[in-house]
Image (tube, rainbow, N blue to C red; front, side, top):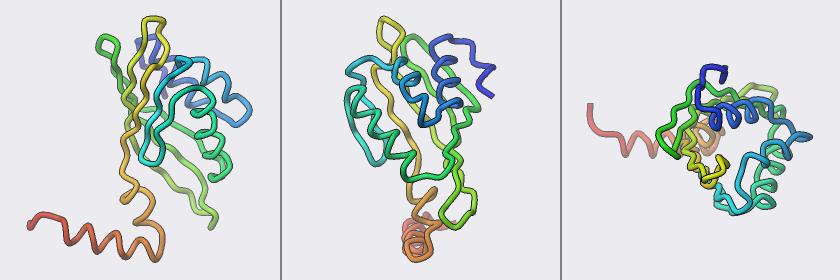
Length: 146
């Protein structure tokens, strides 16, 4: 679905994420600066080797992970991708996590900063039986009155 993105830097990255498999991880890393920063709710790493470890770990932990990019926008050297990560849980049930990536490109058009924004409580913890009850109770307590 990433074909509607007009900026070539962002389009290449979106296509690489949608095509991402364990065996083509080097193709994705080639779009990142050597000392790129990658941050998500669980990781903050710098450099190709560390970023590769994050994605290798994802492939070890998740069954059939696949990214689908629905939107992208760029202004200057900064951009955003709106995406969904789908995978299959150990129970056999499909699961989807929605998120947004903020990207900063360097002068060569490579990703210098990649920061993912998504809510692990809503997307993961609330769907785990025991943790889910705790997460929902906490959300209820923190929710503003209607």
